[in-house]
Amino acid sequence: MTSPVVLGLGGCVDYELKLSSSILEQLVGEYQIHEAELTSSVTVTDERELVISILTYLRKGGGGEHFVASSECLSAFAGRFPTRTTLGGTSVRAAMEMSRLGVPSTLHLVSLNDIVRRLLPASCDYICSGDQDTLYPHLIVQYDQDMRVRAGDIDIRAPFPNRLIYVNDPANESMLLSDELGSLLHDARVFLISGFNAVRDQRTLDLRLSTLRSHMRQLPAEAIVYYEDAGFHEPGLSQRVHDALLEVIDVYGLNEDELQSHLGDAVNLLSVTEVARALASLRALIPVKTLVVHTKYWSAAFGERAGEYADPLNEGILIASTRYCHGDGYTDHDYERMRNRPRRTEAVEFAAALEGHMGGVVRCLPGFDLDVAAPTTIGLGDAFVGGFLAAVSRSS
Image (cartoon, rainbow, N blue to C red; front, side, top):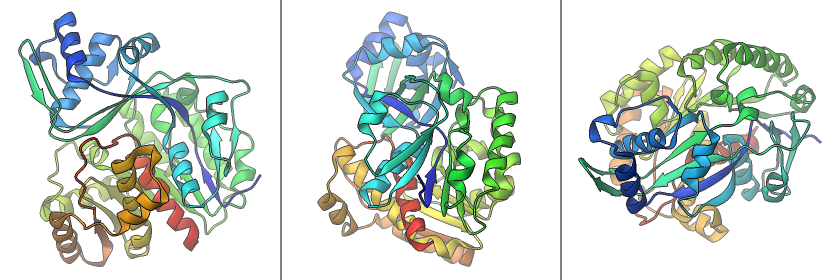
């Protein structure tokens, strides 16, 4: 079992649902939730706090990921809505998108069960660090733009569509690494690192990072290592991952929510001066060879080799946009039609202006002009990573 593309480090089963105003309004009434309570919280311990967390994000149109102390409250909330069972985790979703593009890969998993075996494409091989089947579903909540919730003193409307992730997953929290990982990396040309955001214990994280570095010594010198950021369940641990891995990462990817989280401030994504300042500040915090930021308006590479990543950026945008419009069920025809859609006018102007302002260290590509009544907001960043790495693997 060898593949030039190795994708890790975790994976999961997702329960996907789309919010409805009526159920949220009912819950606001049942739990006597007030507008003043809609403030950000890192963890969620019961269904009332879960509803508050969702409403807080919905009000600003944001996305995020959170640890939930009670798996029972996830099940209780999911039981109020129709749900879809899918596979999740950045590495797994990226592998599935790459499979559609004809690029096989090998996954490193920490949890395995019959759902994973049934839903993984045949072109995706895998190893798993777990010695028995486990199932810890993640709750993935999506909402549409302009969704409105009115109950009591709460009256909010979502300015953008987005998705939220709520997790209670001991397997990903432990992130045990398989002894086979090093030999798997021996012939790899591309290696994706993701999933450390789920680890909540510092000692466990430090041990896993040290073990990973040992495995990575078997990577060929020319291999491209891509790290995809995510919302850390314990935000203070993010820096430990940076300290351990930055020197061995070639490309560091993140979305607009993670960009603004690192900077601790909102960024106008169509302001050249604000984005240029944000990229420079982010590079000072995360000094890697190449930063990749993917947003709803544009995607950009920032670094001395930024120009080499134009095709991967474009493929990432193309795949994520096709998923946004058509969901899991998109066809080859949908994908080819997306290529010919016009780009967003304001994004085209922004991308040209940003490159003109920052010079050759930035390559910025505009997103497509997409007007969809009920878009898919789940897995867009993962789809971007899959498209990006498919293009990288073809050129490496």
